[in-house]
Amino acid sequence: MRTKNSLTIGAALLAIGTAACTDITALEQQNPGQVSAATLYVPSNAQLLVNGAISDFECAYTRYVAGSGLLVDELSAAIGSVDNFNYDGRRLLTNASYGTGACGANQQPPIYTTLSTARGSADTVLARLRVWKDADMPAGVNRTRLIGQASAYAGISLVLLGEGMCSAAVNLSPELTPAQLFTEAKLRFDSAVVSATAANDAATLNLALLSRARALLNLKQYAAAATDAARIPANFVANTGTDAVNLRRQNYVFLSINQNQWSTVDASLRNLTINGAADPRVALTNTGRPGTAQGSVIWTPDKYSTLTTVMPIARYAEAQLIVAEARLEAGDLAGAAQAINVVRATRTGVPAYDATGQTAEQVRATLIEDRRRELFLEGRRLGDIRRYNLPLSPAAGTPFPGGGGVYGTQSCFPLPDVERINNPNIAK
Image (cartoon, rainbow, N blue to C red; front, top):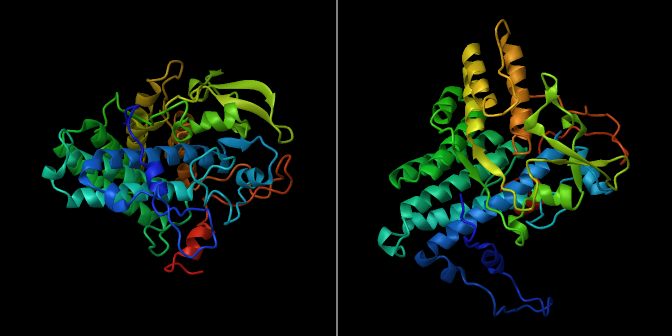
């Protein structure tokens, strides 16, 4: 969705409000390099601001993929660190770095602040774009198109907050439930669909439609979700941008597993087969290298083979699996199987699924497993566990290997202290 050379505003936003540190005890400080918000948020920077919001999202998304996978059953800790063991063991403290960490080389993937920053960046520029006029835009910049992009990325950030967080807040709001976050996301997607259609921006339109379908699925509005998902063309994919040098834009899964060996692919996903053959959807490599966590061995996902491998944000396969779920909920088992097979047909070596004579629960089990494999390490598994109310694996109370203690009961990231303490509208 972004060109390789698109600019990022992350550093500029960081500079706003940053105080000089030459004398931390002084009551009055100055920062000659500080960027003024009044200078930054001007129409001539409209494209830059939207690019920056997208960059913030992409950085947050790659961390969410790894962090959500580590919390549940896609990844396991490979580094001998108590904080990493608590992450993998589903026993996070509310002052842990998942809540406060920013985009960087994080041993424990940041979740709340990065996603909140991405949502805030997109919503902030969106508010400005709605005030500015077309005539204010630089030559060649389409304000309506930018509104569509900013709306879409604000919405996706909210979807991830809804799927990953037990609760969250938006702009110092009271504590919001996942359902409220998905409803907020849908409002952004509604705007994105209207603007992207008006701007003839097919890429943003498809991203918004598929992401809205995902939000509607979480809201159990299955028919509406299927309507949006059915509009997605077979060749659609929205990928992150990547850069080998800029840490924010590197493939964080590769960085954390292949490069730094902080995590490894969970044992439950190793050597998976289908009809007796290796399943290409979860192709892995056993490096044989030990991690520093006792007994860990580094298994890497083949789908993310370099620091610059793109990560899909949304793609056609997910759209068809949403259609399958909606048909299943409507009692159309044959239709659900048909949609599952549309996805399977895109994979060499994955046979068609025959649902003849099967019950709704058997079809559902196949759909859940196909989502686990097809959408492996794309940030969907945690949301699926919550939406389907799947049992945690390993079960709570199971001894935690290597790091001591037992697995906890967390199936979402708790609202962190940083929000609860600083938000006057949330009970302490």
